[in-house]
Length: 238
Image (cartoon, rainbow, N blue to C red; front, top):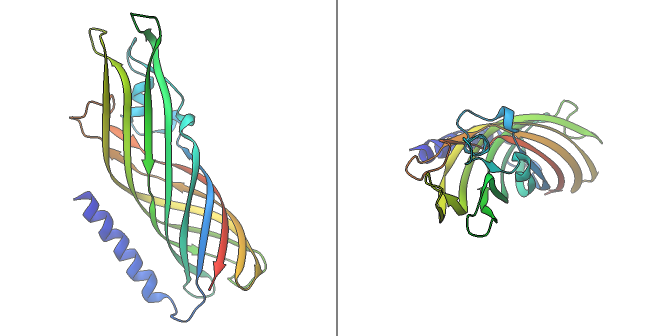
């Protein structure tokens, strides 16, 4: 149901912006590479499984940092004009990060070693956006701000050794996946170097979270996917 709703939202946004776009106007492909940072521990949604892992009752709290999930992200966005001061955009990005963790207050009874796990998050944000260029699309320097909707397929897993209530260690792979939907806002600056080539930079914020399957056995019941992306853009016009 959620995936159907997400698809309907994207299709509706695309229909509006594409119907308003001049057919013969110059379009662009913007290739981006940057760094995605998840929202910090204090700003995450209640029940977020990363926070719950960190705050679990002793001796079951895990040791890692939310900032350990910061990592490279990259993708491409199709841009098309909606007049001299507006642009529509449709894009897709990819992000993945594996973070090692261990029990903060518990070690293996046999050899005293840490009880280790790998926490892995993967997302593929798909966005439909509109941006406003206050100086227009034909200036030598083009600042802009924009907003839109993001549909975020995600997969999260915790794999490794875990301790049960009797403190017996077992190996397991907890995994869940789904699709989240949320707003995207951004701002940036680009500089054309010719009619067909430009460089730019952008800061983008996404807000989204998703429920986790309660039958899997994660410590928390939600996964916060919100965060900030800092990226450089390489733009080709055609």
